[in-house]
Length: 371
Image (cartoon, rainbow, N blue to C red):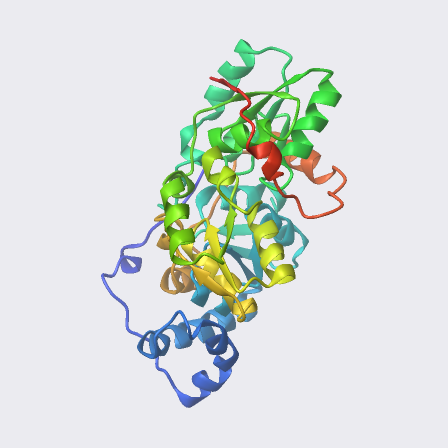
């Protein structure tokens, strides 16, 4: 549940840009060096003063900013104290000494941060930063699924609301979904597991395990839009490019790729292999952010942007810190039950190596039971 209070003086139509001075230029020079291939000098004159002021406000208010991989480079490299995928950010928030956490991401991520850091003030810069996947299912839906499949463990992707997590036996990420599904099957003594809400992730996991999967027809609108033709076009134009796909994509995308794994696994792949050319089949800004750390690699489209992630800007991060708006809260009962599901996953032994999806297995069709 998101709670806010809005004052009329907070609703001004515009804002006066902060001055771009020599001191600001010097203070933000290291950030400019990372983002200069993605930001024009004209844009930078507006962004740099905001970056400097946001970083000052963080020190003044004992605040930290969690910047998801899909944030634009000015946010990711300019003001993010912790960067990465949604679960990694929530875990860092819990370990941080900061009293205020600003979630540069979408609302389910802010709720997860609140679940793991109930004593902290969690802010989201834009209340409309939602998620097509998270909104595809509710806690009431999960209760009905459990009635239909009694005794079958429910594994829920972290890209869900706290209300959904609260009805879950254990959460998973795209990096550990196979591990968690197999653990749940062993713990419950069953050959069947409910994996919700991402249909494509569930279908891709089903190809990696002998556990039978019951799935829900939810999708990430970004990853759903990619097509095999996109990959064919990329290979025709850049024959040497390596294609990396996220497991939220349809199975045929993984079949046509050279590597499949979570955002962290894709990042590790580029850092370790240093390919001359690479195509990341995921949200646009991830390529921009990884490129700053891998300047020797050429990153090639296609590019699908998440409209919800792009609602987060330097300006509304600044506003969130100035006015300490908009606070995210979760009902105590929901929070406690959601934390159990997340913590159960966190307590599992980490994989020995960064999780990847075996592309030989990925090319074999395995049926799932779609609810």
